[in-house]
Figure 1 (tube, rainbow, N blue to C red):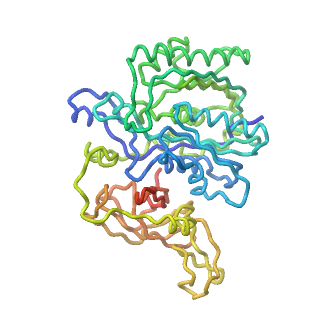
Figure 2 (spheres, one colour; figure 1 turned 180 degrees about the vertical axis):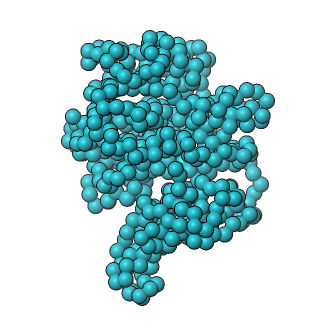
Figure 3 (spheres, helix red, strand yellow; figure 1 turned 90 degrees about the vertical axis):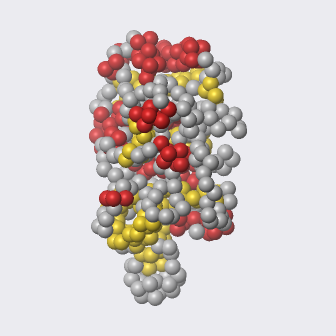
Length: 472
């Protein structure tokens, strides 16, 4: 039987308090906070983080990768292939990449597609990555609601931690939330109509269809994971289905926000962090129809408890100090023209150096073992020429040996902190520190690497690895 071999998640370290929105707009934005992707993050970088979490302790081998998002950085360019390269999957082996988008159900659509690929022996292992970073209109009902996050699963037919016992899907052409090609913000209709004719009808229909198909009842499940557009509708759906609220996984509306197509996958990750062998879980999500899954946890779950998952990411956060920083991160205002030429990118250079910057390979001298990044033809220690092998550095931690702060740099998050990192096992790297509190940066601080968008130039997103303080 095919199922989930491993899981992972990612929540950006930045958070914005809803009290801050209340102060800015003069009307209640609710309580709690929401997760906000840093200025150098997007759904590709968040998906990579979630995949790294899911692949903890595992060999980087699979037959394919599915990426799901309603907010991919490119509208015409496959994002799954970029994620696969950043994860350093080999290019000389059969490997398929797929993007799923345009629906808040994209995450579970990808999950079911990956399941069918494994069941059909198209691949023995498939990676599912889902992430969203939706842009709400300022001073709208969606601004305090939308949050950013990602989840990932490794599917396979061996060492299964969660068996996928059954699925049931319905489709619907009903429109409740949408964006056209040139729309910046979401469009919707009157609340009562869209919820009564959409969410409240279709989600229960998929759940009841699953139960009838596999001859099970709600008493057969230990936990329920239900998609919801907001806290009020989540509570109403629990009541409508007659479920015990203690058995329903709580969505983190007050700590993370609504994470789009990553919402129910992230809830599943958190449920699995506490699940016991033998427990059965019903997962259901809605948008353009509905998906329902029947899951059963196996004893293998005990071997993958070391993920950061949802809980550890929740405990690690930095609060945005003001609303202006949020506007700057999201490009929601027209700012003063920069006093320097705009960033320019060379597609030929990015392609030529892709192993160094997207895969983050260094060169290891075959004569003396010295690791250098960027890769050099001549070893700095023994002067051996063109005698090196490429080695991956993205999974290494290191120590800051020196750093410099620039308070006047033309960047979105001042000060700009450039640091020299000495990697464990050898190698040195100079990069810009991200996800940091500037007053806490010091020599000797432990850092890890994270994929980020270095800058946009010539219409291209320039992805590269940056150091950041190790998250808990």
